[in-house]
Amino acid sequence: NAGVMQNPRHLVRRRGQEARLRCSPMKGHSHVYWYRQLPEEGLKFMVYLQKENIIDESGMPKERFSAEFPKEGPSILRIQQVVRGDSAAYFCASSPPDRWNGYSYNEQFFGPGTRLTVL
Amino acid sequence: AQTVTQSQPEMSVQEAETVTLSCTYDTSESDYYLFWYKQPPSRQMILVIRQEAYKQQNATENRFSVNFQKAAKSFSLKISDSQLGDAAMYFCAYRSVETSGSRLTFGEGTQLTVNP
Image (cartoon, each protein chain N blue to C red):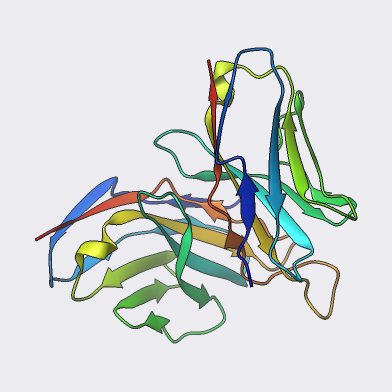
């Protein structure tokens, strides 16, 4: 069973360009989380998604950032008009659903991260 | 909102010795999970150990154990017989089970160096 896949592993963008980060969860996992790690800091929660639903986006910046997890295909974190402050490592994690409710309190398995550098 | 504090930005230990990493947290909830994650230079986040708040017994995984003090809101990680491969950044994390969604709230991390 392959782990959580993220691509690209490294992404370089110039200010004002768009960045698209992809995350393929582990097989059987329908819950995806995105975290951001700024240099020398811990991971900060951004968004929690189920297939075709955003469950919690309270950690997402209000502008320029969006996330989706379509019925088919990977989850996408999209950053429009990137600025230097967006330079960070972006981690995706996935977990299987609970059997008794729609959310997931199971262990989150992390991908290797995408390191975004904005020039 | 929950917060997690790791007061030791850096720690070092001699190979084969024991080291304890500190973590405190703030919450008004009575049921939750606590975790220690390891992040080696590869930056991959690896789960080291997990503690459920309603369990009084401290979790143990081989050379890794925790000292969970619920009243004091303290959750320290003890690494016994330290190995060179233990060198990494260690993050303490909190997860609620009382609110919908299950985000992890991380501390700022402790960089552990293992000296041969």
